[in-house]
Amino acid sequence: MMTLLAALALLQAVPGQEEYQFERERHEFKLAGLLVAAEAIRTGFDEDLRLEDAWGFTVEAHLRLGEIYYYRFAGTWWDAEDDFPSSGDVEAETYTAGLGMDWTFGAFRNFSFDLGGGVGLMRLRDDADKETGFLFQLEAAARLRLAPHVGLCLTGMADFANLHFRTAETRHMTNLSVGAGVEVSF
Image (cartoon, rainbow, N blue to C red):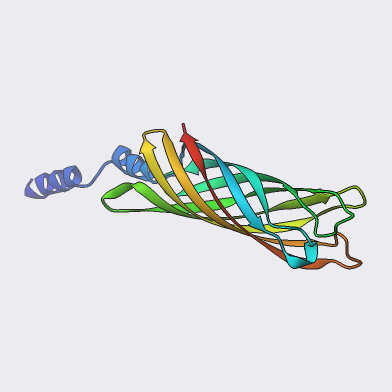
């Protein structure tokens, strides 16, 4: 009889199946929202492109996966001036998709540092030539939330592209950008 009572007491101390399933569900990734940022950027183009530094515009969307990770989608557009006096303007654009993560620091919950990367395409066109090439992009950003759904961002980007725009062979080109903008989250 004493053994039976001890076994019943032990069974009550062991967590049930429902409690175990609840713990497992708590750790699954869930979509946590959407962030959309619009930024003005200044880009220093690779010397091989023979383009002047130019102002551009970036639109970026983050589809959140929990508190830290997100899918990153970005598009950037420039109207750059050519180094050649006889040539016209060059339209440049990039489109990327990738992943990112952000960190917040203890009591500074309204400030985060983000690091993201992605792959995509860079497209350049002028009156005489057009080219689309592969692109790898790295981004680092500091974000400051001003209100529950509105914030500011300061961004640095490096684009690594393979293009043969105005050259006979494909070249590896690096474009560096800095930008600042406004973001809205849902």
